[in-house]
Image 1 (cartoon, rainbow, N blue to C red):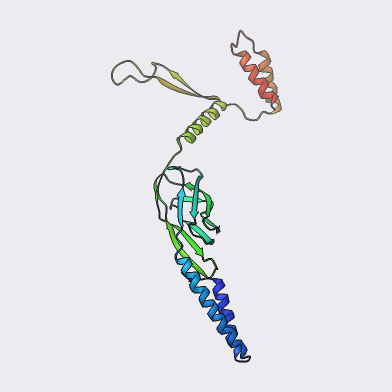
Image 2: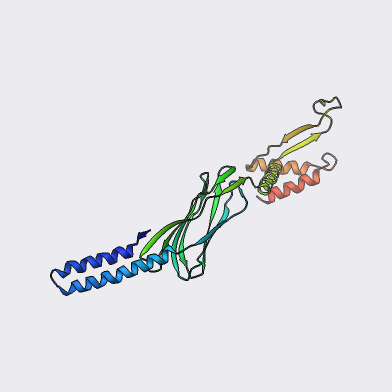
Length: 250
């Protein structure tokens, strides 16, 4: 526990009164009275602060998602009848980043204070939180007490299966949009190791089309679309629909 800036200011004022007493004797009585009042306030404020027992908890998902911004909530309860001012600092795991890990505010008597931040893990596995430290200012603001109110704790970090699945689906859709297809030719692959026929052959087809068309090239594509007919191209309708959508969007 240490004195605050407010206390240092009062002590400086008291010292000034003693200095002025050498040239103006009545200031000595002012300085002595200030000493007595300040001593009583310091003792009473320190006794109240020493009895302060805050309770706190850190809340988050049981398993944090790798590479995602996971919400962490820190809640502090004040079970005393005195309002308090405090600053909190949470010690995050080494292989993590956060947008903020500190909070500052006031807690009313029998009140609650909470702050939230987002934790982004950079490595999977078991990680370790450090202590949650509170710097508490006394009711009169004369003392500051630093105390560890929540010890560290372990947390599991793994990839989010749902997000991973959505990412794979998105990649497959983008691959299809770019003309990439995978075909399965059943029975055309390598011989089965157990001697029961052949496995399947997976063929990846990549159709590369120009992303930007010059005017002459566009005219050639339009001419090709007009020459297509149902007998020569069974997929003519699908091709023309796609061509119309393609040129209509330009």
